[in-house]
Length: 217
Ligand SMILES: C[S@@+](CC[C@H](N)C(=O)[O-])C[C@H]1O[C@@H](n2cnc3c(N)ncnc32)[C@H](O)[C@@H]1O
Ligand code: SF4
Image (cartoon, rainbow, N blue to C red; front, side):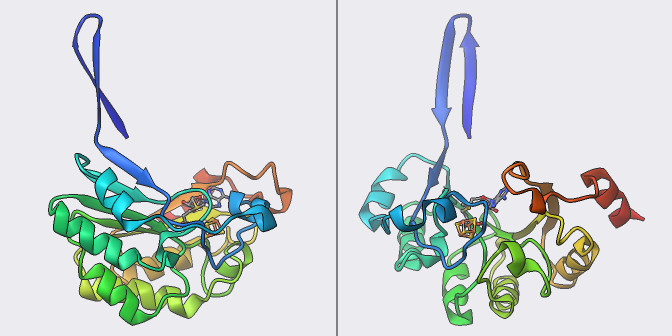
C-alpha cells in the first residue's frame, strides 16, 4: 500500500497513496476466527465520523474499507460516506471488503450506482448455500446472492469473490466457481487461512494445489 521511490543513493521518498479505513466495529456475523468474535462483550461499537473520512482521504488515490473488527456495510451512513468521497474527490478509487450479508437490494443499488469500473467490492463468501454459514455464522445466503446480482446489474465496479478454504467447504469450491461465472463476476479466488492452528476443525484435508488442479480439470 506504500510505494517507495529510491531517487538517489541515501534518499528514500515514501509516497502513501492508499488509505485503509475501518469504518465501523459493527457486524452481523460471528466468524469463529475473527478478532471481533474474540473481543465479544469487550467490543465497543463505534462508527467513523463522515467528516473525518472526508478530511483524511485528501491526497489519496484509493480508500480501502476493510478493518479487523467490523464490516463497513453496517455503518449507518456508509452510502453517504461513499457519496461524499466521490463528490469531493471524483477520481478516488474505493475498495470494499464485505461478507455481503443482510443489506436489502435497494441499499446495494444506491451504493453501487456511485461506483465505477475503477472501484472494487471483494465479497468474502466461504462456501455455497449449504455451508457458507458454517464459518460465516448468521449470514443469510439469499441476501448475499441478491447483493451480487444487484451490484452486477447497476454498476460497472469490479466484483471479486474470495473463498477461504476450510474442512467443511473444500468440496464445494467448483460449485462456487461455477456460480461466480454464472453471475458474471470479475474474479474468483480460493485462499487458505493463516488461522487453522487456532481452530483445527477448520483445517482442510486437501492442499490448495489439489483444489486448484480439480478446478482446472
Ligand atoms: C475482519 S474482516 C473485515 C471485513 C469484512 N467483515 C469481511 O469479513 O470481509 C477482515 C478480513 O479477514 C478475513 N478473514 C476472516 N476470517 C478469516 C480467517 N479465518 N482466515 C483468514 N482471513 C479471514 C475476511 O475475509 C476479511 O478479508
Ligand atoms: S464478517 Fe468480517 S468482521 Fe464480521 S465476523 Fe466475519 S470476519 Fe469478522
